[in-house]
Structure formats: C-alpha cells, structure tokens
Image 1 (cartoon, rainbow, N blue to C red):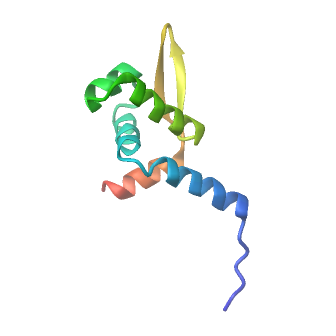
Image 2 (cartoon, rainbow, N blue to C red; image 1 turned 90 degrees about the horizontal axis):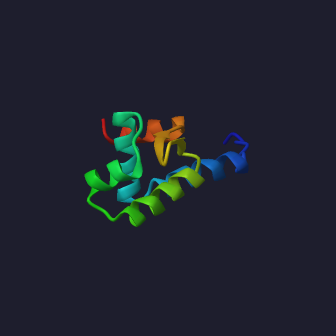
Image 3 (cartoon, one colour; image 1 turned 90 degrees about the vertical axis):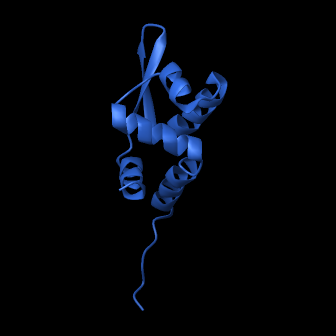
Length: 95
C-alpha cells in the first residue's frame, strides 16, 4: 500500500466546511444564496420562515467557516457565497 501524506491543516479546513453545512437551515441558506447571488437577512428570514435571530446565528456560523461573506449596503448586509468548496458540495448534493 502506498504512503499517503496527509495534510492535517487541509483536512481541518475541509471538515470545518462540512460541519458548517451539516444543518438543514445552513444548507438552505447556501443553496438560496447560490440561486440568487446575494440577499440580506430579511430576505432569508421570509423565505425560510424563521425568526431573524435564528437566521443571523446560522449566517454567523457560515461566515466563520469562510463559506459566505457579507457586504454592507446602507443599513443592511447582503450575503453571498465565497467558498468554491461549499458551492461544489451544494451542486453535488442537489444535482
């Protein structure tokens, strides 16, 4: 059997993405953001039928994992997916 060198830093970063995507609400948020390019908390709250605070908590987990990024537009923040890995995972899951 061949020796396979394992890059533990790479494995940790990939596991972080998988962990962040492992909740149905966060999968829904990322799938929605990929469909519409970007939207704010109010838009997500309406389509997900969840309280704003719950949506914000899920957005924070996705942002901390490096999956999404927010851009301030006046008083609101528009979120979009910035992780190619997350986009690939969503594409595979929902093709």
